[in-house]
Image (cartoon, rainbow, N blue to C red; front, side, top):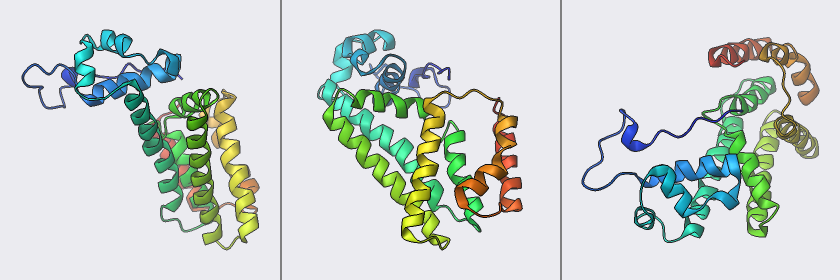
Length: 222
């Protein structure tokens, strides 16, 4: 999925004008660092290179961060706040049926404003070389799985069954993106009833399916 270069605070007409000698904000540094992490990997998240992209000196960086490690720690916090929180909130959202609950889960992955899949897999790639990041990934996956399992339990599934279904649903969704499956959204929507039947073991809620189709159409995904 193509990424859009982050819009800097100074170039964003919706942001308040910068004052004094400030050319970029802490958010700008984080946004550009996130972009580099996703496109090039953590090894390329370097202060000097980021400063060059932002057209500012290193002193600007140290006005916001103690060190490169501080920036990387903040990137991990940002990833967790964006992606793990999105999934947890989606499955905790009110739902009249398990079909609607699973559709809420799907929503979080489809809307690019909610879940940044490029960032998720960049952090997973980072974790292959960093044990501490691996621990963060494992903890995040456990948190996400507990939330999805709790959703199934709310609709009467026994604990073991809920945990199993949560794992099938969650790991399928991650694998779908990891394999970079390319198919028209129309084809994916054509399978939604079958997916829901497979994941829940019950007939799909027609109202939830119709509402989900409308949500996807409004996103105007290819």
